[in-house]
Image (cartoon, rainbow, N blue to C red; front, side, top):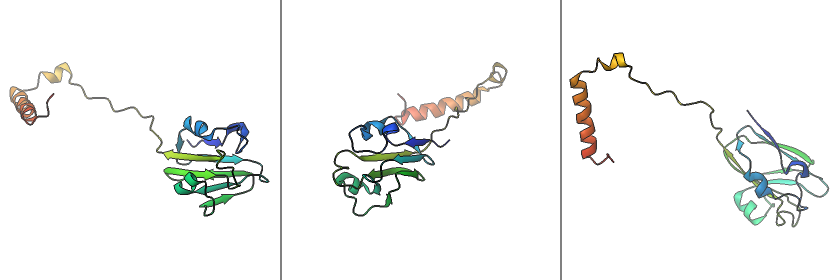
Length: 147
């Protein structure tokens, strides 16, 4: 099930030092289909999706995408890193940047149960089957795979 994340929680997307975006991201698990919501004052901020290099250098001159309406929604449609910075001078350097890592969703399915030999079927095992199994185990051990 997809999750909607408001970047920076109630503080939103800001450079005022109210949010440590690295800490904010650290407690989240992002998956394909999740949505990011950037809320900010568009007179003072914007959102630029950039490459890793643009993220590291706080360079917003060649963004992948630019958002400017003050309440922007971005759907995470693929796995990997998504990098966002504020393009206003000094804001990224002040910490208004975020690296979102999208990972595969994990399944809540439990593993299939191991099959068990019931007492009634155990009596049908023949000596030749046990002898063959012992030979295979011995061969595996001789190859160095036994501990």
